[in-house]
Image (cartoon, rainbow, N blue to C red; front, side):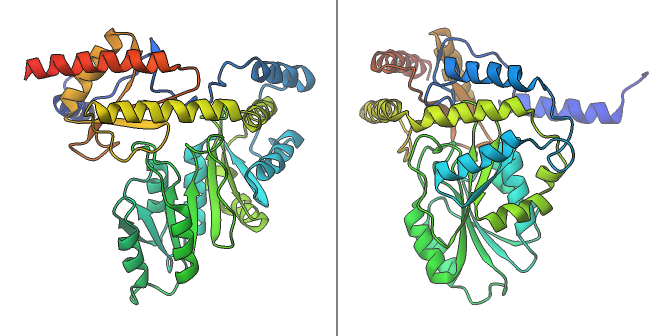
Length: 377
């Protein structure tokens, strides 16, 4: 192609702007002690999971599903798994999607109608935001975890006559703080609203949410504590039947191979018996948060295994990540648009393969990095 192409110029201009703002992302292979992984229970290399995958391949032999679940891709393993997962979280039914993103998009874009209003926490994950954007419902974004604001918004008499929905994450992925599900359910009871909770970061780590008539759906990803892939929407059998017929991310996608169901099953089985791992994860999290607060680091309102180190500027965050990587620690630098402007951070997520000594070694390196930054300033 001779000369400059306007389309390629546009791509180049965008990438240059991202580079100038320290927002350019690239792919790297993590190396060093892992402090950015979602493998919360440390099951990603467990021998029982590997054995389950090998056994399923030997038994069935298929490495491809050959079609969507509504065509040639359904298998008894998937139906058994959905029933098992519903039991695991105390729901009537569950439906499996190939990813958490697909589950949230499929759920929200299909159930919301033009006359409905959805109230969404400002810190919700992109998959929830995109699902809501794809729906025709009226949107109300309420400040992060601001129950009083939500209460006032629900009181408004000018809301459309349709259904009202509240959507939150149980543990927020970039902040590590928690939604007050009991308070939200009380609001739903009072105002006739429906609650949808994305439990991506609590599935397998915390007890399942208490099921009530106003809890419409929970969403559970399997690629974190369950050390597998895909996601479930859990709720009533009517909801799952509706999604089979209306959720485009379920209808129009090739199913994962049957051996993947055995993989997820093994992750669930191990998570059921992981009380010791959960206890260790909780203790690690408490230790990390307590020490970071004592050292004067900004970790927001974190109350979980996700601990944000809020640094503010993109440039500073990238320097911290690079310095810690050089010290042997794999950490994730999170910048806008993943988080609000001025709140760039290192997202520290703990897992049970870590020890208290590991945490303290990381904090020593973090202190050294901060001291270097202070000299730089």
